[in-house]
Amino acid sequence: MRRALPPLLSLRVFESAGYHLNFTKAAEELCVTQGAVSRHIRNLEEALSRRLFERGPRGVVLTPFGASYLARVRQAFDLLEDASRGRGRSKSVIALDVMPSLANLWLLPRLSAFSAKHPWIELRVATSMAPVDFSRDEPDLAIRLGNPPGARAGQSRRRIDFEMVENWRGVCAEHLADDVLTPVGRRELCGEAASARELAGLPLIHNFNRPFCWSDWFRSHGLRGTGQVKDLECGHFFMALEAARQGEGMAILPSLMLTDHALADDLVAPCEGVPSGTAYYLLARESAWEDRAIRTVVRWIKDQVPPALRRDDTTS
Image (cartoon, rainbow, N blue to C red):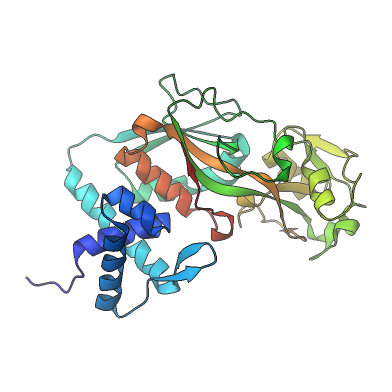
């Protein structure tokens, strides 16, 4: 039976280039030249009679058609991969360690979708704020906030006290999302839109694990000495969000956590977020980084991040 399919190798090159949004990294992953990647992409675009990529300020970006086509190509490759593994094989078990608020507000509501798409992987999620110790058996993969060695950092780096790992030797870090701090509160408290000066007059909910969030946010708007009074203090962002939902005041959270689910019940984000100068990173042992199950989890997690928070940045 003859099928009207584009060249499968070109599809594989497109999947890699679409994942990395970088032709050089796709070439490195596939052990070909950057010119070969460009030729495969050009051949695929000619076969489809559609543009897949266009040039952006920081490199290539997917066109709307390219993004939609990439999702379908990935689904097709996932089906082929699952079929090739065979029905009788056991599941791959991946232990993932995530910071508590990120797990509660962002990751856990998505896990059923992951399991439906990748039934051959059992993802076991634990939560912790402690530095990851990859010298032990677990975890296989972790998400932490910080700036790994060699990563770009903003002016606020000194105000983030978290250590990401016990020891960076043999550890890979891949950028997940920039940390952008965004105020959130009930609509009747702050309205649909508000200025930073207006928020300064409202009760503020603080997170004692991130004590500088409010003062840094106000400082970025030219308001120094504001945000120091702690009307209410919570231990985690998901607690601060719940307090805001109860009308206790304005909370401030990373934009990554402000999903539609989190902003339900008449909560609004009345002002734009401000980058904290740090980011969330996916961490794993260098020896396990190319494991197929781990790369599948990494790729899926990165796909859940809004494009505005992404950055092409890999450190090891």
